[in-house]
Length: 454
Image 1: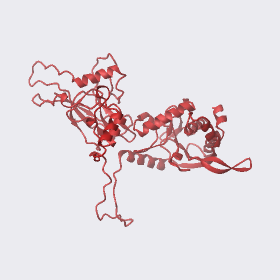
Image 2: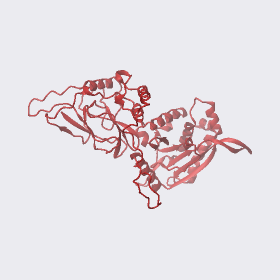
Image 3: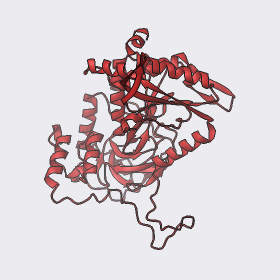
Image 4: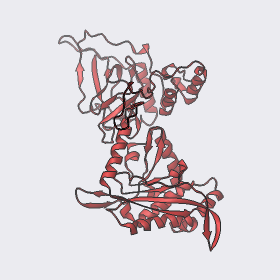
């Protein structure tokens, strides 16, 4: 047989390492080309990694929870082709397994695997060329005397196509291999996992591979500065290390200034109430933010310190701060300047759900040009937010609550919110920042007139 070792690829984010969250296969399993074999967590998202080789899993190079370097070995697959012991007529390669053939048939029947990483992916229909081996991947011949792994029929990889289903099972402490699938050809669905959770609930123990709780510090460990005993030490995840590095870089490189303004959002709330099936409040604020960036394009760019230049973008990729189980991320609505309010609403809902489930693409996670932070959803009024480097500004909106307000000389109760705006003082002065804030604030206070102008 021939063993192919697949190295962890660059997932398109410029990162140097990734953590193995879940192995989707085990040693001895039969895998097909482009079949997902692991979920890995980078500093940006959780992604499925497909294998460019088909055959029998020979070795997994790392345990769940282990951090692997990009370019290091991830998985080794034996293709089952016997190598001759002495010069002779080569043996006829073994045919594809039944599971592998069915997988290819499913691929032909659909639109392709979609599991495309840089340099890998399902060939187009009708192509017959040789599959390109990833850079640095070695095919290691093994003498024929080495025993061939067990036949593929001994263990079939469970059919699961949805990352959400795998995540649901993992969080419940279930192995998908133990779940009976009710879908076509035994496909495991969300309903199957929920049923298995219900059946196992009375007796199920915590998952053996669940992340361990924070370990208590050794008895007697005392912090010399405070004189207090340390109760625990929690290792920082790759995601948290990346966040810490980005925030530290933002604070150290950007001369940041903050302005804020209270805004009467009564008319915007009324507009939303008049159209309960229409766009949400955040989509209107997003639309007004795009309008503000058109009026002040210097806030939609970056500082190229190496060349001493201020860069402005021809278009807006509007980042949205989203709180997830992994921490705060800022995926971007790509091409937000081309979308209507209704289209922005649909894209915001899709993007935030994808970010929380770890399905946002690398382009969405890294391509933002400006960030909108709805910290009002956390029931707070204001925040001096940190700019998402290398962007140059971030706009925050607090909760909308009833407050006393003066209208035409009369004291009344209005729906009021606070906008806070942090900007890089290298790209503009306070006048431009205030001008941007007034574009957004005035639109919130008179949304009908603002939409008519946009």
